[in-house]
Length: 368
Image (cartoon, rainbow, N blue to C red; front, side, top):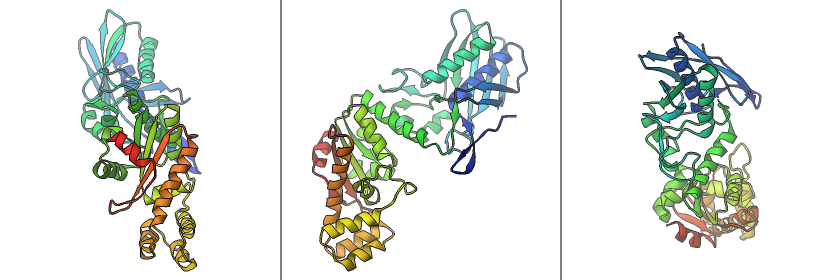
Protein backbone atom coordinates (compact mmCIF):
# COMPACT_ATOMS: atom_id res chain seq x y z
CA UNK A 1 0.00 0.00 0.00
CA UNK A 2 1.25 3.49 -0.80
CA UNK A 3 2.71 5.36 2.16
CA UNK A 4 0.93 8.45 3.49
CA UNK A 5 3.02 11.43 4.55
CA UNK A 6 1.88 14.81 5.83
CA UNK A 7 3.04 18.36 6.31
CA UNK A 8 1.56 21.12 8.45
CA UNK A 9 0.85 24.56 6.96
CA UNK A 10 -0.76 27.40 8.91
CA UNK A 11 -1.89 24.97 11.58
CA UNK A 12 -3.55 22.56 9.15
CA UNK A 13 -2.43 19.08 8.17
CA UNK A 14 -1.99 18.31 4.47
CA UNK A 15 -1.10 15.08 2.73
CA UNK A 16 2.08 15.16 0.64
CA UNK A 17 2.02 13.89 -2.92
CA UNK A 18 4.64 12.79 -5.40
CA UNK A 19 5.60 14.29 -8.76
CA UNK A 20 5.40 12.85 -12.25
CA UNK A 21 9.16 12.40 -11.93
CA UNK A 22 8.74 10.22 -8.86
CA UNK A 23 6.11 8.21 -10.73
CA UNK A 24 8.55 7.60 -13.57
CA UNK A 25 11.21 6.47 -11.11
CA UNK A 26 8.78 4.15 -9.30
CA UNK A 27 7.37 2.58 -12.46
CA UNK A 28 10.91 2.04 -13.79
CA UNK A 29 12.03 0.38 -10.58
CA UNK A 30 9.00 -1.90 -10.67
CA UNK A 31 9.49 -2.77 -14.33
CA UNK A 32 13.16 -3.71 -13.84
CA UNK A 33 12.33 -5.84 -10.83
CA UNK A 34 9.52 -7.53 -12.78
CA UNK A 35 11.79 -8.14 -15.78
CA UNK A 36 14.36 -9.77 -13.54
CA UNK A 37 11.83 -12.22 -12.12
CA UNK A 38 10.52 -10.56 -8.98
CA UNK A 39 6.79 -10.32 -8.32
CA UNK A 40 6.42 -6.70 -7.31
CA UNK A 41 3.29 -5.05 -5.86
CA UNK A 42 4.90 -1.85 -4.60
CA UNK A 43 8.26 -0.11 -4.59
CA UNK A 44 10.04 2.31 -2.29
CA UNK A 45 11.67 5.39 -3.77
CA UNK A 46 13.95 7.93 -2.10
CA UNK A 47 13.47 11.65 -2.73
CA UNK A 48 15.83 14.58 -2.34
CA UNK A 49 13.11 16.20 -0.20
CA UNK A 50 14.21 13.81 2.54
CA UNK A 51 11.23 11.47 2.59
CA UNK A 52 10.69 8.01 1.11
CA UNK A 53 7.52 6.89 -0.60
CA UNK A 54 6.09 3.38 -0.85
CA UNK A 55 4.19 3.46 -4.14
CA UNK A 56 1.77 0.81 -5.39
CA UNK A 57 2.27 -0.81 -8.78
CA UNK A 58 -1.17 -0.69 -10.43
CA UNK A 59 -0.21 -2.27 -13.77
CA UNK A 60 2.18 -5.11 -14.62
CA UNK A 61 3.04 -6.73 -17.93
CA UNK A 62 5.97 -9.03 -18.75
CA UNK A 63 7.07 -10.25 -22.14
CA UNK A 64 10.06 -12.23 -23.35
CA UNK A 65 12.27 -9.17 -23.84
CA UNK A 66 10.50 -6.46 -21.91
CA UNK A 67 8.51 -5.54 -18.82
CA UNK A 68 6.06 -2.70 -18.12
CA UNK A 69 4.86 -1.29 -14.82
CA UNK A 70 2.49 1.58 -14.14
CA UNK A 71 1.86 3.73 -11.06
CA UNK A 72 -0.90 6.19 -10.32
CA UNK A 73 0.06 9.85 -9.93
CA UNK A 74 -0.93 11.22 -6.53
CA UNK A 75 -0.59 14.96 -5.87
CA UNK A 76 -1.64 14.60 -2.25
CA UNK A 77 -3.90 17.38 -1.03
CA UNK A 78 -2.55 19.76 -3.67
CA UNK A 79 -4.80 20.52 -6.67
CA UNK A 80 -3.12 18.83 -9.61
CA UNK A 81 -4.73 17.91 -12.93
CA UNK A 82 -2.27 15.03 -13.35
CA UNK A 83 -3.41 13.31 -10.15
CA UNK A 84 -5.02 9.95 -10.85
CA UNK A 85 -3.39 9.36 -14.22
CA UNK A 86 -1.16 6.32 -14.71
CA UNK A 87 2.47 6.79 -15.69
CA UNK A 88 4.17 3.75 -17.18
CA UNK A 89 7.72 2.60 -17.76
CA UNK A 90 8.73 -0.02 -20.28
CA UNK A 91 12.18 -1.53 -19.88
CA UNK A 92 14.02 -3.51 -22.56
CA UNK A 93 17.46 -5.02 -21.95
CA UNK A 94 20.10 -3.74 -24.37
CA UNK A 95 23.83 -4.18 -25.01
CA UNK A 96 24.71 -0.48 -25.00
CA UNK A 97 24.41 2.05 -22.17
CA UNK A 98 21.14 2.61 -20.36
CA UNK A 99 19.13 5.48 -21.82
CA UNK A 100 15.74 7.02 -21.16
CA UNK A 101 13.23 8.18 -23.72
CA UNK A 102 9.57 9.11 -23.89
CA UNK A 103 6.50 7.62 -25.52
CA UNK A 104 2.81 8.30 -25.91
CA UNK A 105 1.51 11.10 -23.73
CA UNK A 106 4.90 12.59 -22.92
CA UNK A 107 5.32 16.00 -24.52
CA UNK A 108 7.92 17.06 -27.02
CA UNK A 109 9.79 20.34 -26.46
CA UNK A 110 9.25 22.70 -29.41
CA UNK A 111 10.65 26.00 -28.07
CA UNK A 112 13.94 27.11 -26.55
CA UNK A 113 14.29 28.16 -22.94
CA UNK A 114 13.25 24.96 -21.15
CA UNK A 115 15.47 22.48 -19.34
CA UNK A 116 15.22 20.06 -22.25
CA UNK A 117 16.47 20.77 -25.76
CA UNK A 118 14.09 21.37 -28.65
CA UNK A 119 12.98 18.07 -30.15
CA UNK A 120 13.49 16.10 -26.95
CA UNK A 121 10.85 14.52 -24.75
CA UNK A 122 9.97 16.73 -21.79
CA UNK A 123 11.71 14.62 -19.17
CA UNK A 124 13.59 17.07 -16.97
CA UNK A 125 17.20 16.49 -15.87
CA UNK A 126 16.43 15.69 -12.21
CA UNK A 127 13.96 12.83 -12.80
CA UNK A 128 16.09 11.65 -15.73
CA UNK A 129 19.07 11.33 -13.42
CA UNK A 130 16.98 9.55 -10.77
CA UNK A 131 15.62 7.05 -13.31
CA UNK A 132 19.14 6.13 -14.42
CA UNK A 133 20.33 6.01 -10.82
CA UNK A 134 17.64 3.59 -9.67
CA UNK A 135 18.36 1.39 -12.69
CA UNK A 136 22.03 1.06 -11.72
CA UNK A 137 21.22 0.54 -8.07
CA UNK A 138 18.99 -2.50 -8.59
CA UNK A 139 20.36 -4.11 -11.75
CA UNK A 140 23.62 -5.03 -13.46
CA UNK A 141 21.97 -4.89 -16.90
CA UNK A 142 21.55 -1.93 -19.22
CA UNK A 143 18.11 -0.92 -20.46
CA UNK A 144 16.21 1.17 -22.90
CA UNK A 145 13.67 2.83 -20.60
CA UNK A 146 10.55 4.34 -22.17
CA UNK A 147 8.30 6.52 -20.05
CA UNK A 148 4.76 6.89 -21.37
CA UNK A 149 1.33 8.03 -20.18
CA UNK A 150 -1.47 7.73 -22.77
CA UNK A 151 -3.82 9.94 -20.71
CA UNK A 152 -1.24 12.68 -20.92
CA UNK A 153 -2.29 13.71 -24.42
CA UNK A 154 -5.59 15.13 -23.14
CA UNK A 155 -4.46 16.10 -19.63
CA UNK A 156 -1.64 18.25 -21.01
CA UNK A 157 -4.22 20.56 -22.58
CA UNK A 158 -5.24 21.60 -19.05
CA UNK A 159 -1.68 22.56 -18.09
CA UNK A 160 0.80 25.30 -19.00
CA UNK A 161 2.60 22.92 -21.38
CA UNK A 162 1.16 24.15 -24.69
CA UNK A 163 2.07 27.76 -23.98
CA UNK A 164 5.53 26.72 -22.79
CA UNK A 165 6.15 24.97 -26.09
CA UNK A 166 5.65 21.38 -24.93
CA UNK A 167 3.38 19.63 -27.40
CA UNK A 168 1.51 16.35 -27.27
CA UNK A 169 1.69 15.43 -23.63
CA UNK A 170 2.70 16.06 -20.04
CA UNK A 171 6.13 16.82 -18.60
CA UNK A 172 8.07 14.49 -16.35
CA UNK A 173 9.19 16.98 -13.73
CA UNK A 174 9.96 17.44 -10.05
CA UNK A 175 13.17 18.72 -8.49
CA UNK A 176 12.51 17.24 -5.05
CA UNK A 177 10.20 14.40 -6.09
CA UNK A 178 7.52 15.62 -3.67
CA UNK A 179 4.38 17.71 -4.20
CA UNK A 180 3.88 19.97 -1.19
CA UNK A 181 0.20 20.97 -0.92
CA UNK A 182 -0.64 24.66 -0.89
CA UNK A 183 2.91 25.35 -2.03
CA UNK A 184 3.19 28.93 -3.16
CA UNK A 185 6.79 28.31 -4.16
CA UNK A 186 5.71 25.71 -6.72
CA UNK A 187 3.25 28.20 -8.20
CA UNK A 188 5.93 30.87 -8.37
CA UNK A 189 8.30 28.44 -10.00
CA UNK A 190 5.72 27.68 -12.67
CA UNK A 191 5.30 31.39 -13.46
CA UNK A 192 9.05 31.97 -13.53
CA UNK A 193 9.44 28.89 -15.74
CA UNK A 194 7.12 30.46 -18.31
CA UNK A 195 9.07 33.72 -18.26
CA UNK A 196 12.34 31.82 -18.72
CA UNK A 197 10.81 30.02 -21.67
CA UNK A 198 9.89 33.34 -23.29
CA UNK A 199 13.38 34.70 -22.72
CA UNK A 200 14.84 31.54 -24.21
CA UNK A 201 12.77 32.20 -27.32
CA UNK A 202 14.38 35.61 -27.63
CA UNK A 203 11.55 37.69 -26.12
CA UNK A 204 12.71 41.00 -24.62
CA UNK A 205 9.31 42.65 -24.18
CA UNK A 206 6.58 40.89 -22.19
CA UNK A 207 3.00 41.39 -21.04
CA UNK A 208 2.21 40.33 -17.49
CA UNK A 209 -1.39 39.33 -16.72
CA UNK A 210 -2.87 38.11 -13.45
CA UNK A 211 -4.90 35.30 -15.04
CA UNK A 212 -7.16 34.23 -17.89
CA UNK A 213 -9.34 37.35 -17.68
CA UNK A 214 -6.36 39.64 -18.24
CA UNK A 215 -4.97 37.40 -20.96
CA UNK A 216 -8.20 37.57 -22.97
CA UNK A 217 -8.35 41.34 -22.55
CA UNK A 218 -4.72 41.80 -23.60
CA UNK A 219 -5.19 39.75 -26.75
CA UNK A 220 -8.65 40.94 -27.80
CA UNK A 221 -8.63 44.60 -26.80
CA UNK A 222 -4.94 45.53 -26.88
CA UNK A 223 -3.94 43.33 -29.82
CA UNK A 224 -1.07 41.72 -27.93
CA UNK A 225 0.25 38.45 -29.33
CA UNK A 226 -0.36 35.48 -27.03
CA UNK A 227 3.27 34.43 -27.39
CA UNK A 228 4.29 37.60 -25.53
CA UNK A 229 1.99 37.06 -22.53
CA UNK A 230 3.08 35.62 -19.19
CA UNK A 231 0.62 34.74 -16.42
CA UNK A 232 1.95 35.94 -13.05
CA UNK A 233 -0.94 35.00 -10.74
CA UNK A 234 -0.60 37.27 -7.67
CA UNK A 235 3.19 37.44 -7.72
CA UNK A 236 3.83 40.92 -9.14
CA UNK A 237 6.98 41.64 -7.16
CA UNK A 238 8.46 38.18 -7.58
CA UNK A 239 7.88 38.22 -11.33
CA UNK A 240 9.30 41.74 -11.72
CA UNK A 241 12.38 40.53 -9.84
CA UNK A 242 12.58 37.52 -12.16
CA UNK A 243 12.25 39.77 -15.23
CA UNK A 244 15.08 41.92 -13.89
CA UNK A 245 17.29 38.88 -13.36
CA UNK A 246 16.50 37.68 -16.88
CA UNK A 247 17.33 41.13 -18.33
CA UNK A 248 13.90 41.68 -19.87
CA UNK A 249 13.75 45.17 -21.43
CA UNK A 250 10.11 46.11 -20.91
CA UNK A 251 7.01 44.78 -19.16
CA UNK A 252 3.39 45.77 -19.62
CA UNK A 253 1.20 44.87 -16.64
CA UNK A 254 -2.45 44.43 -17.63
CA UNK A 255 -4.91 44.04 -14.80
CA UNK A 256 -8.42 44.53 -13.53
CA UNK A 257 -8.98 47.43 -11.15
CA UNK A 258 -9.01 45.14 -8.12
CA UNK A 259 -5.46 43.96 -8.82
CA UNK A 260 -3.66 47.06 -10.09
CA UNK A 261 -5.07 49.22 -7.31
CA UNK A 262 -3.09 47.14 -4.85
CA UNK A 263 0.07 47.67 -6.87
CA UNK A 264 -0.58 51.43 -6.75
CA UNK A 265 -0.50 51.03 -2.98
CA UNK A 266 2.86 49.29 -3.12
CA UNK A 267 1.38 45.82 -2.60
CA UNK A 268 3.38 43.39 -4.74
CA UNK A 269 1.58 40.20 -3.69
CA UNK A 270 -2.05 40.76 -4.61
CA UNK A 271 -3.77 37.77 -3.01
CA UNK A 272 -6.46 38.86 -0.55
CA UNK A 273 -4.94 36.73 2.20
CA UNK A 274 -1.77 38.84 2.03
CA UNK A 275 -3.25 42.34 1.81
CA UNK A 276 -6.27 44.23 0.62
CA UNK A 277 -6.32 48.00 1.02
CA UNK A 278 -8.22 48.64 -2.20
CA UNK A 279 -10.74 51.02 -0.67
CA UNK A 280 -8.09 52.77 1.37
CA UNK A 281 -6.09 53.34 -1.80
CA UNK A 282 -9.16 54.54 -3.72
CA UNK A 283 -10.06 56.92 -0.91
CA UNK A 284 -6.55 58.38 -0.82
CA UNK A 285 -6.41 58.90 -4.57
CA UNK A 286 -9.93 60.31 -4.62
CA UNK A 287 -8.97 62.85 -1.96
CA UNK A 288 -5.98 63.86 -4.07
CA UNK A 289 -8.34 64.32 -7.01
CA UNK A 290 -10.60 66.62 -4.99
CA UNK A 291 -13.31 64.29 -3.65
CA UNK A 292 -15.48 65.55 -0.82
CA UNK A 293 -15.56 63.91 2.59
CA UNK A 294 -19.04 62.49 1.88
CA UNK A 295 -17.85 60.84 -1.32
CA UNK A 296 -14.78 59.43 0.40
CA UNK A 297 -16.97 57.95 3.13
CA UNK A 298 -19.18 56.28 0.49
CA UNK A 299 -16.12 54.88 -1.26
CA UNK A 300 -14.76 53.54 2.00
CA UNK A 301 -17.94 51.54 2.55
CA UNK A 302 -17.66 49.81 -0.86
CA UNK A 303 -16.83 46.13 -0.89
CA UNK A 304 -15.80 45.92 -4.56
CA UNK A 305 -14.01 48.16 -7.03
CA UNK A 306 -17.07 47.87 -9.30
CA UNK A 307 -19.15 49.61 -6.64
CA UNK A 308 -16.47 52.27 -6.23
CA UNK A 309 -16.32 52.77 -9.99
CA UNK A 310 -19.99 53.80 -10.07
CA UNK A 311 -19.51 56.34 -7.30
CA UNK A 312 -16.44 57.81 -8.98
CA UNK A 313 -18.32 58.13 -12.26
CA UNK A 314 -21.29 59.81 -10.60
CA UNK A 315 -18.94 62.39 -9.08
CA UNK A 316 -16.73 62.97 -12.13
CA UNK A 317 -13.74 61.38 -10.44
CA UNK A 318 -12.74 58.91 -13.17
CA UNK A 319 -9.27 60.48 -13.12
CA UNK A 320 -8.63 58.31 -10.05
CA UNK A 321 -8.10 55.31 -12.33
CA UNK A 322 -5.59 57.12 -14.52
CA UNK A 323 -3.71 58.30 -11.46
CA UNK A 324 -3.63 54.78 -10.05
CA UNK A 325 -2.21 53.41 -13.33
CA UNK A 326 0.50 56.08 -13.30
CA UNK A 327 1.38 55.38 -9.67
CA UNK A 328 1.45 51.63 -10.37
CA UNK A 329 3.98 52.25 -13.12
CA UNK A 330 6.08 54.35 -10.75
CA UNK A 331 5.99 51.71 -7.99
CA UNK A 332 6.96 48.93 -10.40
CA UNK A 333 9.76 51.00 -11.94
CA UNK A 334 11.13 51.60 -8.46
CA UNK A 335 10.95 47.87 -7.76
CA UNK A 336 13.26 47.13 -10.71
CA UNK A 337 15.48 50.17 -10.05
CA UNK A 338 14.45 51.75 -13.34
CA UNK A 339 16.27 49.04 -15.31
CA UNK A 340 13.08 47.79 -17.00
CA UNK A 341 10.57 50.03 -18.76
CA UNK A 342 7.24 49.26 -17.10
CA UNK A 343 3.77 50.22 -18.27
CA UNK A 344 0.36 49.56 -16.72
CA UNK A 345 -3.13 49.19 -18.19
CA UNK A 346 -6.17 49.00 -15.93
CA UNK A 347 -9.54 47.71 -17.18
CA UNK A 348 -13.00 47.05 -15.78
CA UNK A 349 -15.64 44.32 -16.11
CA UNK A 350 -16.97 45.94 -19.29
CA UNK A 351 -13.54 45.59 -20.88
CA UNK A 352 -13.00 49.34 -20.87
CA UNK A 353 -9.58 50.85 -20.29
CA UNK A 354 -9.90 53.04 -17.20
CA UNK A 355 -6.26 53.99 -16.85
CA UNK A 356 -3.13 53.68 -18.97
CA UNK A 357 0.27 54.84 -17.80
CA UNK A 358 2.72 56.88 -19.83
CA UNK A 359 4.96 54.01 -20.97
CA UNK A 360 2.12 51.63 -21.85
CA UNK A 361 1.63 52.67 -25.50
CA UNK A 362 5.32 52.23 -26.31
CA UNK A 363 5.36 48.71 -24.83
CA UNK A 364 2.05 47.71 -26.44
CA UNK A 365 3.56 48.51 -29.86
CA UNK A 366 6.45 46.19 -29.05
CA UNK A 367 4.07 43.38 -28.09
CA UNK A 368 1.76 43.48 -31.11
